[in-house]
Length: 353
Image 1 (cartoon, one colour):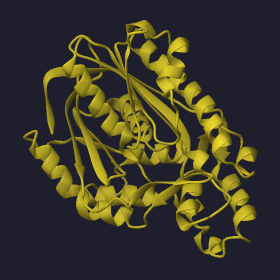
Image 2 (cartoon, rainbow, N blue to C red; image 1 turned 90 degrees about the horizontal axis):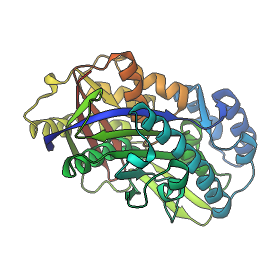
Image 3 (cartoon, helix red, strand yellow; image 1 turned 45 degrees about the vertical axis):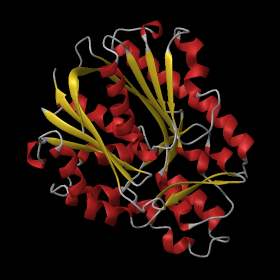
């Protein structure tokens, strides 16, 4: 665990959602029309649309866009247009919340794993945000659902290493672009019932007063777990890898990993007032509560974010943090998320406001 020698303030946090709202009942009906004749197991799996814990999601394209076959050119164009728009919206809101402008940013960390952009998203957003030509850019790919927590840990480490620098973290994920009509698997059906699009941004610095201080960050990767979660790079886009064993794995292994991560900061599970978790799905939420010794139902912000936005991958845990902040952040919290690797990422936050 990386214990902060220099305090890093979390000055602001903001979220952004795309304009198209997908009601879960409408998605389920569209999926039935599309899949029931070509995927023999669809009816047996259709219950996932009711048990996923999702009511609505947001997407960068209207539902009709997803009902036609799409290849890399279409998906990439949608990623670049929708991703940059969300990037700018979230970044502008976070900067405004900190009382800053784009020209004040010294380091910008971009976390995104649902599309390919070279130049990366922050380069494409520089003019719209008014970023300086000498801003240091740190694009990060491949963190998946762990990206919100891991990105916050990375951004805080960069702020600590560069005193007085303003660090802007932006995470953007467009999971809906992985929706496919061809080569269906059980994981694709689950993804169709679960994933949405969104972005979140925050500003960090060693100078200034924020609503929390990043006290420590940590990661733990389990060996021989590469096939639990990730992407398959295929001819028509990214195909989801999503093992059924994720809830069971989290229930069995997360507690021990968290004990180790906290011990490096001379803390124990009992010291933490609130765990703020990435809500990968309803079964994952229940597994996290069980593994960390919480009563079932305690992860209420997580359930609310999942219901209103679905699983947006990396930004989702920052949506949870935003709800917790608005409701009144606990004195000592741990932000945590599981992602490809298979990896647990955590950030310890101490309330300051």
